[in-house]
Image (cartoon, rainbow, N blue to C red; front, side, top):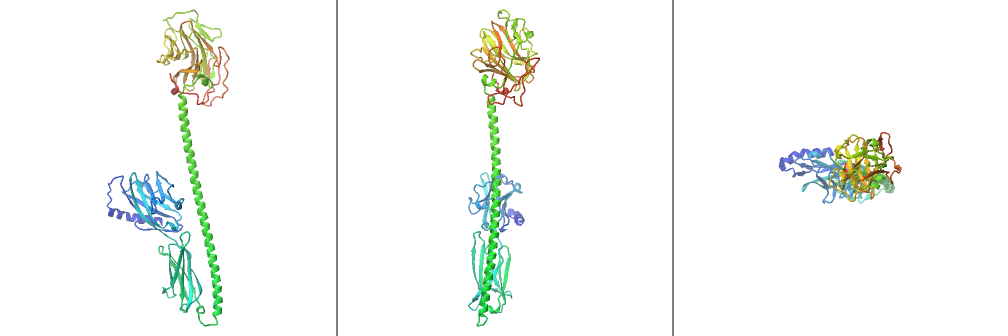
Length: 555
């Protein structure tokens, strides 16, 4: 049936275009909607396709497509934003319609109605819209169904003849009933009644009075006018059934009563079978609809879950990116950094510097005046190759001296006069010209001058940060070069009665560092020291309180 309708539509398309004189080079936003040239016939219980196409030919995938009955709001099917919309759809068509998408790019769209019912019969409108421009076309659907074969029975004598009744049910539309004699002659005088059940199917009853006893039999035929299909049944009428003064009258009445009882039994049996079949079909349709609704609910739940997960992932990424830019306090960072015990290397110290016996403090051997002949520095004994660690340095006479501390590479130039900068392998802060800041100076000065500075080195993320350990506030942060290599704690004195003393990360000078109990993340490494120094786990979790990466640096 679908192929027939499609073939009929395509066969009339060329003639329709010629009659309408549609310009081939018209505006891409204007079009005409063309429906089938004649009615579409559908059989009860089968599927039917209602096609429409646009002229000139264009892709209709991104259009709004709508099929409706007498009113725009009585939607049979809606296709918008490349998906089916069910909010405005009539309840009778939910779960029974689908879009044929095979020819959307060629300008043809069709809606398929499954399991055609009697109420599907009538006029439809297909409506196509692109932007503010829209067009529509009408089409007619004729539903046809062949019901039961007629049941013919004798009800008894009537006036001067015999009354015969023909019954048939389940037909659509209202069928045509005809009585015929054996010769083919039609009986024109008979009565007919009809009724529709809840599904709109017709039941007919035609009553004929046969007065010619010589006929022998009569035939009742029921015809569907749309499909042209006919069902017929003949009944033989014996001559004794016709009224006359006869001793057989009593026998006739007995036989007629028996036949009526048999007929009623047969009708009851047929109706019961029909009702059972109808109930079974309704239950199957209900199960099918429930299954489709369950599948739709499942798909919607999965889509909602995916959308929620995507939203959560986005929020998490935004949240973590914002936290990485935050300036955290030192006590928060200490939760995730390993306290490192630093010992000074006397062999790396300038000759004018004195390193304490416990290798935790450095000062001048005498009280030097400000000198222009160089700067004096010392490195730690151990180098750091990976992980996250921190140490604290207490500065005596920090305000009235010139000094610096931080980290540097092993191969930096430390002879004579030199200037500390990241380009030369130094990442330090300190006092210069009575101003505390980062070196080289970036114009931002810290007041008050810290008396105790914490150095937080994160080789996993590639940065070094300095904190005022008195109030825990952030001082400066430097991004490290990707080729920094092994880094060493760096201490420099230039003038003044100053001393730099290395403290543990959790208390006063020379306390034993407390190991971090948090297990290290799988993506991070323990602190690795070159030489014969310490080796301890870093244990940095992916905490939202810990900024990381170069984007978190604020000099």
